[in-house]
Image 1: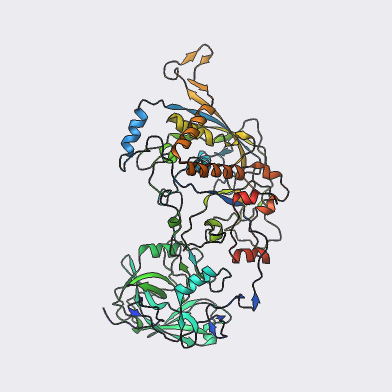
Image 2: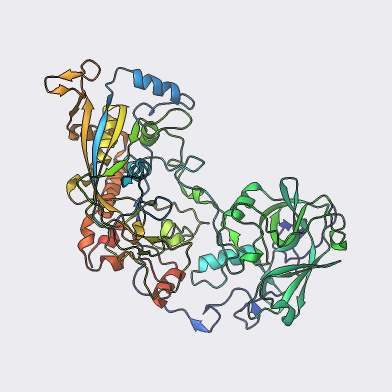
Length: 629
């Protein structure tokens, strides 16, 4: 292998960029270390301002919570003893076998009890041009989520999965949550023994592209002190004849920039595809200076930074094979890049992806009730069909006054204290072996969905002008089913009857986190009778071949099946999960005066809320939120 140079600090026998990491005595410090010298780590001070962290009071709040994850998957009736690869044949035999199968429909009635909004894509309520409606696809998605919980289903990653598997990124030096700051420090810094300070251990190089593949070629660099030149208004790269000057930000304390040279174009360190994809997916990357992001979320290169390898500049001599060249910093093991970024202390991915926190027994290829009934794209289609639900004929639509809504923000799994199970009541981050907490659902609550007039955030990417339907509108439609076994029919009947207790409501549509979309759902079951294929007319006229049927007998069969399939320990957990599901679906919370505060997003502009978030105090579980003081 061609000779490479040592640029970092040694950490045992690991090699990065082709050489051992030896002390270069550089200090890239930003915070004061405990010995009074400039360096990273060692500080317990708040944002470097000399203030110590006060212990936060109270507990975190959120408009959502989690029904515990099931410990095992309950297989669909026809698949409990299948061998891999036999599913399709077993499915055909099941449909044509001797056990009775049932076809028919549920007459569905949905009434919204809080303001309700289904977006047509243009920030207006969904319509077919003449009628306001709830698309069958929206109802299907909502019911499928409850169905997964009720039936101990799989939680899969992959193209057709339930969870988007990806590596999350972080960057922290002085977090009050020490396990996180220590993890970053261990990965990205090394101790300078002469000065007893921590300095970056990432290596300089050039990110290059050859064909469709990306690599990093090691390089050398100098840290140039020039306060006037370093404080650029934007992050940028200056390509000179023999050097490349890299200006990574506009911090007030910035006094240095980085000067790259000595590229080893014949040494190529492989960048695994998953590392590239995870960099693309890190939407928070270079948030403060997005102009220095090397790729966007779609994998498009930042054309403001790169240079082609056929340039006449001496720095690029020997790089003619590359059509994309940009300076960067990286960490590699055995010539394989582990991660990279635009500055020496960049955001890094956690060592485990989201999917690695789902137990293998749950993230499995088992054919659960959902796959068997809602369809398996590789083997069979759905036997459950959700039709559109139309506004009831005698109901005149009545909308709230159009206004800008509170930002409808998506999931933020970087808040690991909310998304991962705790250990000894302490938060675990994504490098840990903790499992995800379970299925995310939203609380019912009353809330003014309108954005405050005093809120200066006018970012149209996260706020919308909408006019939700006022409470009290009724939609009617059907859910059809074909050739379900008695147990499968019981599972479907059960999920559509969760509100029959008079206490539980479902969540549907947009704005669940801000109080929109709480609905009552009623389902009346109709089954095909013997006359469906033999008689067109009866004494009363046209014979539909359908008759109203009792749901409860089928629900009882499903519940018996679940108890039979689960061990005593698993069934105990199942009952706890069903209790949690009932608690988070309880519409009685709408009447509690302090409930909106207990289920609000935390306000990071409030000092105590900010400390709760920074100290990573875990979100209490469903039972603890509901528990009266």
